[in-house]
Length: 333
Image 1 (cartoon, helix red, strand yellow):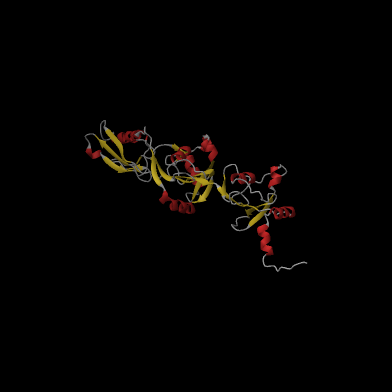
Image 2 (spheres, rainbow, N blue to C red):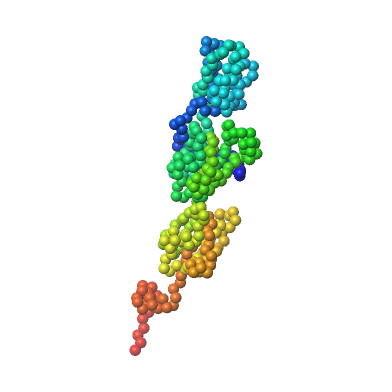
């Protein structure tokens, strides 16, 4: 598990919230009785024929509430309606004979939404009302886009409400007591393959970021001067050139220049010379590209023989006229 400073990450989330749509994943077989009560929920309890024992409470931040005529606080967090009702009945049995108690969650708390952002077709916030896994959230957001890279990060902004003590301790350690946001990285190919280890349960408050692939740029004597993305698995020089349609006839394939970022500087670059012809002949290993590489394919110089041939065939007539224009004329008798 890695960590990132929450203040910095918070700015990223806040700046992107305005473009997100909000939706919900709801189970058609959702059962009220299986719902686990938490802080902010409103409970209404009634005792048949005993109005003085009726109550209407909101669960506090500690997951507890106060019951009329009962000295101690009642714990409701991570318990079902039936479990809480049974405890209420147990307490009231000290005052009433066979009390008929009813209890229900009148208003549910609104859980923190899950944020799905990055290279997905529909960046959005999703309100979870049932258990959902990562692959389902990606599908619910329209799947990934063409410029998606190979990495998906899941940030856990808060400890899951009803997690066990071990999970809570681990989250507290990894988040440095809430000052950082712990996250895990998953390979997109493993997620789409349905591997269990790459398909975790997503909890309210989680932030899913599908990272975009890093670009590289091709210029010079290539058929299309454009940028292409390095997807999962990497991208070689020959693959990148093939993606833009190849090189032009006069391309200087024996000395292709790759301008690569040096260290953390956005301006300083190393220059790497690559012999594409040698690579194609198997005499040299293909060059694996790195994010933000600039590949420059120069035009090769004409040989003396090519220039002479162009002059004979008239191909060099236009260039020759530029040389002869303006010269004086002499007559040889």
